[in-house]
Image 1: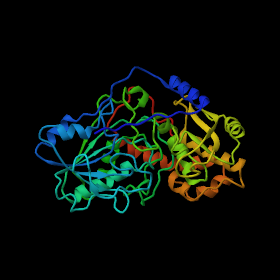
Image 2: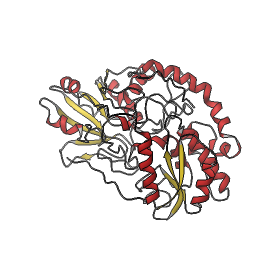
Image 3: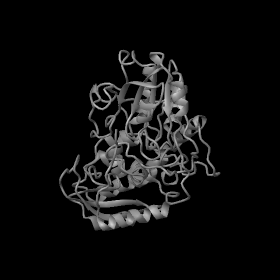
Image 4: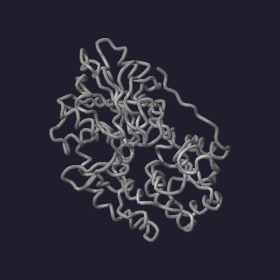
Amino acid sequence: MKWCTAFGERGFVALAVMMLAVLLQVRSAPANVQSQLDELVTAAQGKRIGLITNPSGCYENGTPDLDFLLQAPGTTITAFFAPEHGIRGTLPPGVSSGDYIDPDTSIPVYAVYGTRNAPTDAQLANVDLLVFDMQDVGARFYTFVWTMTYCMESAARNGKPFYVVDRPNPIGGLSVGGAPNPSESGLVGRLISGTGLGVSTRHGMTAGEIAYLWNETSMAPKVDLHVIKCLGWTRDQQWDQLGRVFVPPSPNMRSYAAASVYPGTCIFESSNFSVGRGTTAPFEMLGAPYVNATTFADRLTSLSLPGVQFLPSTFTPTSSVYSGQVCKGVVVVVTDRDVFQPIRTGMYMMKEAYVAYPAQFTINSYASTLMGVPNLHNRIKTEAVDALIAEWQPNLGVFRALRSQYLLYPATSAVADWKSY
């Protein structure tokens, strides 16, 4: 079973800047961080596995872990559970795979995205343990970790052990930012029991750490949880230091560079800007047909936001907003991740888009859901961005204190969460 991606062409300027950004962000030799499956294989001997996965559940070289499990002596996969984008990671956002028989393995696939968020009791009848094996990207509104929590609850209800094959947070485990979203609906965040809060927009945690937090704070009954830690990762490491292939966990999360800006640029999903879906650089390129690319890039550059550069860009998205239409806007390039604040940057970009194009740029209420700020779609037009950020700092402090109790990995440096914002 092969999982592959193609890296298409882009404009010369954007490509040159992306290459520059890579050079600027290289920190050390690859650390060869890896996932450890021996523990899972030992635990699964003679048992029936239900696997929640997609192509990002893979070895450092991109080989799917499911192939390893299918071939390992004594292990049997009896069901796949498909998250958003499906077990092959190819479906568009918001589309459920439905239930079907996988043609390559003849194993049933049950959707856990769409009309249901977790396996039914009947679907777990032929499963002895559930395994979550996917790459998260470090942003609260990415759906996979919330699918994980719903599946944990189903496993607990049915008395099934739950295993998380943990993976590094690609944008690091030190920086924490954004309002702790109290949403309890959908798959972009859930309320942590007894706190009145959710998880901050950039949470600085791994899927295994969130599973641990969720089990201890919000599960009744608790699930028999086993987090298989990734080897060698420390909190201060980001993806380009790991010696791993970046296998896109979803069709429009194509690179580490995209993951770096995603906690901020995803806010434009609540607007009539394209976020570049279907291009070679989704979430790195943003714009609309009515934008003057050079003027908009100059306006953003004049804000002197730290650690980021904005270059004019022209692109044609192939899905979502303005599909098939030429859009003009900017490429967002991180030049110094130690000072870059993606959420603050994204909010400043949105405010500047409104100021530059008040008659054409529109924002809807989904901005509030994404960023956890009530009435953000109206308030960002009239209130200062830094005032909005200051408003969520007390709740962010509460979340940081709670979060600190469930961290599984150390930091090699003494850097604290000073980058909270």
